[in-house]
Image 1 (tube, rainbow, N blue to C red):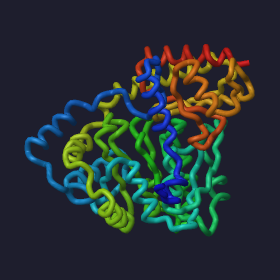
Image 2: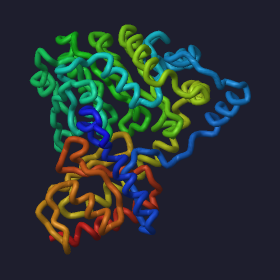
Image 3: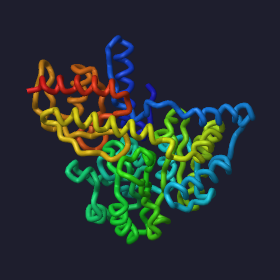
Length: 397
């Protein structure tokens, strides 16, 4: 019998990936499944980016690259940070990785020692806790409620800090809630963090451009915490490049060097062709994303309108990303046929069985009263899915 490590045995499978797999299995079995479980844009990569990739192949950019990425790519990312975020990162402060997930893992593994505490506001992205677990750190979760638009306060943050606190990880716009922190709210958090210079903050900004509230704000813009913040971003969401696998960080040089060292022993650099295509994306005017962002905005409103018609479903108004995260605790204790709903996981399985709609339980994101709905699908598909969900929920009593 093969004995696996305690490390892998203690790790949870990604709930989003697990539900996606289950959806594919049911589709293969002939079920008419609508999957709203994955955070993947239903748009195609822009043609000018694909053209850049083709040009790179034709010019034989097919060899190993520097671990942190091509110099001209990192210079392009540096220009992007300055143009879009007002952040000054030299190319030596930038590390390109195989997706933002690896970027986050690199930072955590470079900073966190066994027993170190990592503050994570909930709801959180599913992988944060598991990456901290691999580093043998301890996650300290700060719950944020739907009434607070799933945002933590400066007071909550200060109260969570202990002598063991080494890191904080959060996202804005947020997966799974779509929450967007304002400049004032980030400033309040920065005023707490500056008093604890030993704390490194991972600011996950992968949904930066999918923002319905106006200008995106970065935590690193505040000089008093600039040297404590690692800004994480990538190409998957705004540029519809999920399969290309490219993420990056802007960080203090010591952390960037540590991530280069870490990555050099695990994966080395990401795909050379992806990197050349990324240069085109970095130089592009984000204004060309307007049509996609407007489409997501319309879809958000469509989903919220339909959820508001469902008795017992409580929703806030997310200002970014492409998720809604409604509270469905009203249905706990209710039944239909052989189903009794005890928690959000039960409700997701019930909706998969009864409505043939795949969603993800909020328990995976740190809030057991909610479910995550991705609206990265056509309006026609969303209308069909919302109708199915409404009918299925109405059967519970």
